[in-house]
Amino acid sequence: MGDPTGKYSITMPRDIAEAAKARSGPSGLSAYVAAAVARQIERDNLNELIQVAEAEHGPITDEEIQALRDQLHQARQQQTHGGANAA
Image 1 (spheres, rainbow, N blue to C red):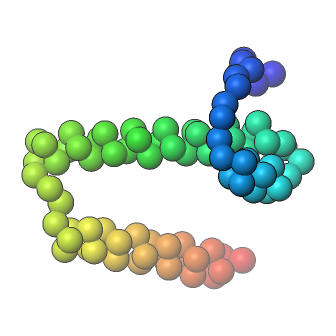
Image 2: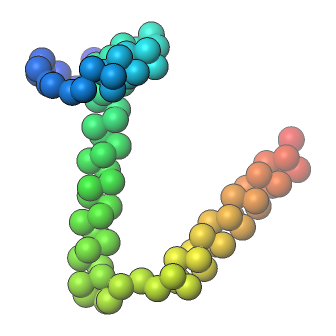
Image 3: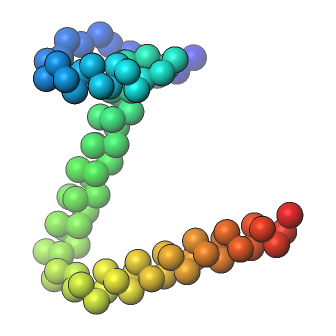
């Protein structure tokens, strides 16, 4: 069985709630909202790590960011092309 759950009451704008309900699919609104909150917590944790790293090492430059994006793009291309060749 999964992690224990609790029942909570939240308030949100009706249009957001209705859009989430429409997109939630068979897993339901609770699962959809839980996944969204989990993603936000991951983002918050990453932002905290970035703040700590920048406090220790200084801010990352635009050039460093672009170099990392280029590396990620190349790795994805190799993975895509490697997977196609392996089939």
